[in-house]
Amino acid sequence: MFEPKSVSDGLTGLPFVFEKLCIRDEEHRVSRCEKFLNAFVREGCRMVEMSCEDHDRYAAGSQILEGLMLESTPINMKGYQSLLGLVENTAGDSFDLYFGLFMFNKNSLEMLEKLDLAFVDLRK
Image (cartoon, rainbow, N blue to C red; front, side, top):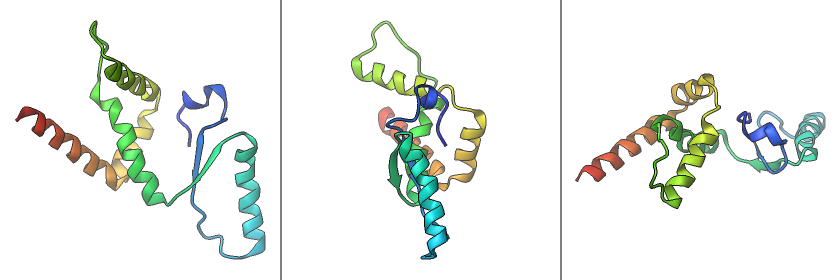
């Protein structure tokens, strides 16, 4: 799954995350899987093999930015400007993507708790 803004210039360099499940050592299954994956290799994707659990953990952290509703200011520092760029990059993502991420990804609640603790620390 690629976010809409990411694929507007093609797939070259984008990560294609996969986990080989239910393939076993059956030659026809391995061959079919390799043919499928090679289609994305030919498009220039950066192939990243990782578990579904690791993917969900990383995704929970990267998608929380959209909910911050950050805005540009007349005094943006470089770091804040970079953060705004990240937020803008996720702004085109669909509601379904966020709904699925936060309803079905157990790591999302943990990420929200970390964000809440960060705000508590800021208030000290």
